Image 1 (cartoon, one colour):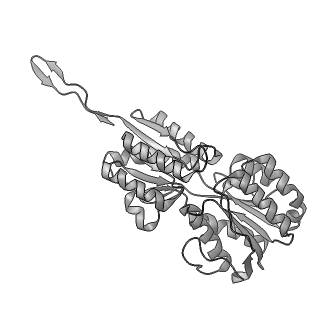
Image 2: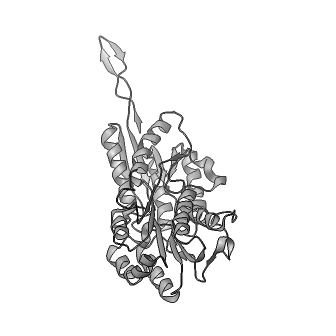
Image 3: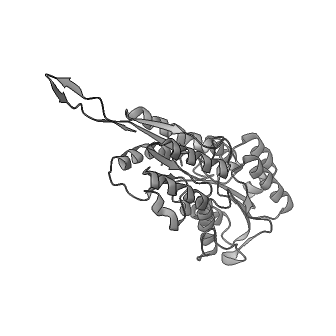
Length: 328
């Protein structure tokens, strides 16, 4: 919050001391039990080290809980923080809350996941991934291995998460070779040679246990499945559980009969792919999101103009380039 130092009396006159601005900016993830968001937290704290007048308050739900995230943002508004960077779990619900931030004059930006187009005026900018492109690149990895198409199961996060819906649309548009409608896009039923199987897309609500179990059940029930595409790292967060689920299908992946591709490039995901327990990753840069958010909020708070959106780039990995793909 902006503070004016106490004026100092000098030779009977009041001489104002230069103003010093101190800011508390909140970085609100979808969940704090999430290794992806841990990296954003680390970026936020790195920016705090560099900016003497900025405090990073990293706070979010312990688990992926939409109502808890909304309550946290409401509390931050009541507390009067100097700026909020939020990754909305439920875009339309979060928009309703952010109207109060606007009324209070608190700068707001989004990161990782954005608001819906009709609500974007409630935030100044978005920093993070071009989410549609994640889906595009995941689909391309699948198509490289299966140019003639086949059957596919899509797995996603929260049903109302704008970022995951954009990724689903990117994947469906690319596989179909045409526009499949508004996010998340219509399910594939033969377009481009691809058909989504019954029971998919799988909704995980960013729960790693649900994600692994969903993949396990689908692969067991559909032995001829061509591809499994997940829009989030939740499928591979729990290394031992994922390895146990994927190991029975390694021979099929090696032979090119089955493809598993997943968003993000967390360390355990890179190792899994190196070991042949997956065939492709499309990674974001969460550290950069958290880091840039603090600088961007400071600029907004000081009345400076910022770009909108601000994209942080992608890393596209396959079995052939897995040792060198990240950071290139």
